Amino acid sequence: MSKQVRVRYAPSPTGHPHIGNIRTALFNWLFARRNNGKFIVRVEDTDQERLVPGAVDSILEGLQWLGIDWDEGPQVGGDFGSYYQSERLGHYSDAANTLINTGYAYRCYCTRRGFLILGNLRKLINSL
Image (cartoon, rainbow, N blue to C red; front, side, top):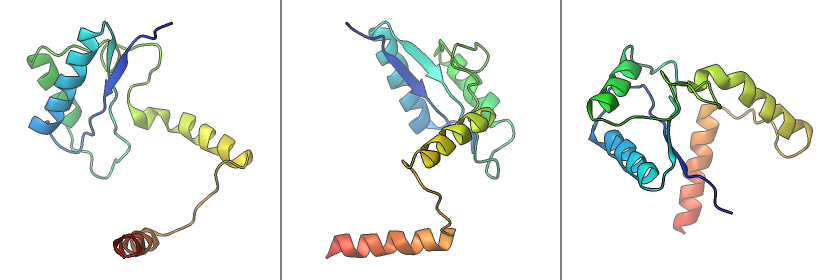
């Protein structure tokens, strides 16, 4: 039994599109079309501090200008919406709480500085 190919392009609207993220969209779109699959656009807009006004529109308009259409996502909808991640935070919170309540995850109270220190320590250990 084969499953339908589903690929996604998940731009972060922290800036306007550039060749790197357009390349990713193009490769995923071509792969989906070649395999009779679905190309999904999901906007990773959870970093509200760095969100650039107008970037989402710029990204979507750029895809349309290039002829890259999507089967699910902003403007077209789909069975698994919303396709803006900031609108799905409640869903993710529920899933995280389920993992915590069943013992498969735990809460971490590390600070950003603490994470940086741990990351540097890991790099140091791995370099030995």
